[in-house]
Image (spheres, rainbow, N blue to C red):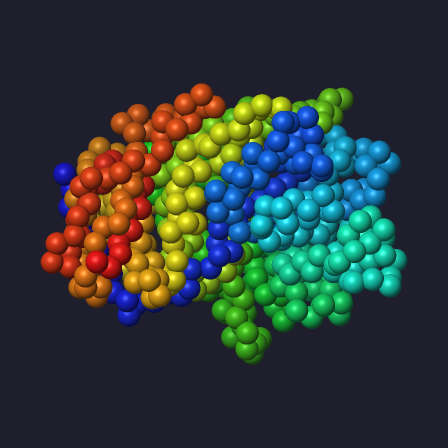
Length: 503
């Protein structure tokens, strides 16, 4: 057994736990919307055709925001296709995913789903094939009370009150050559600045997200952020970051250390934004919207879209079935996001249903929780108050991608109102338990209220509709507190949540 220690002190505050850290993402891709969110024939479907079981699972997951409608899809999307009488809406080719978009769900349906589910919408505009005017039209439709063409059309379509959407994404991944309307950093920066400036003429209080890099391995990473922000800094509030991770060629050790790359990503983007701030003599600070992140096995067959003359509606795409190791990595990525709460002000787990998602559905049938559902739901439920900077002392293990990395990674939150401390920890070791000692002298009088660990001797185990409860995090009976020190044993390849309360 390996030994590690953590010191938690209330004086070392990183920043508040931000509800928007627990956002998600819904794109018109595969079965994310159709037979995922929207399934009119399902026994739980509402008047709009949205599945009630998915609404309940979304609430249980603790999702705060949902980014919509893409993703790559938005770079070719005509939002007007999705409003008005459903039977009159056109069917369109979706070039991003080689599918047919029936437009059965659009802005108004999505906004009603948000209201029912209790999530904040995060709307994306098309800056791939469209530009400033189309973004302004959508903003007018959504946010202007009435008396204009688009706002009156919204009212005629049944939404008397404006939606007042606060957060808007200025396009998607336009650094990527796979993107419809791919642009250079200067081209995109100018377009984003012009769009942002015009949108603020309608509503100066919007929060605007400019596109950052779609991965830290992209050749333009860093340079893209610098150029885009040089053009758009004064007009935007956040810059996006996107990252996906997967186990390659059996290299589990490197995969379990994926948060090392996320840490590097956030630190690099923040440093670049601050450099532009200094050079431009700006006063405000740009923050990071990590609005796509997850485990995604991009080389699997289900990640490849159809081709040729076949343009199906809602094909099975990107339906990864997640195992225990995948869930541990998702839990560790959440630790990284929380650890950077001073700079990461929003994040979106990509995606919510069926497509690389914690929630899976059968058309007309069952829904269930994947392994990755649990660390997200528990973190969203229990992390509260302030994020604390920890002193961690742990042995290291060698990885092919990242060199020597600590076997233990952790973050803690402290709710000053209740006095509760929540410790989130992962054991990245492939073979060894970790005996973790926690110095709690800064929080006298705490006891273990709950300790849960997600692990399995077979870390390749995946949940199905028939046995989805088999990987529920189990009580960790080794957790105890004595003389203002806590102790817990963490099995290999595991994620744990320990909640401590005042006696």
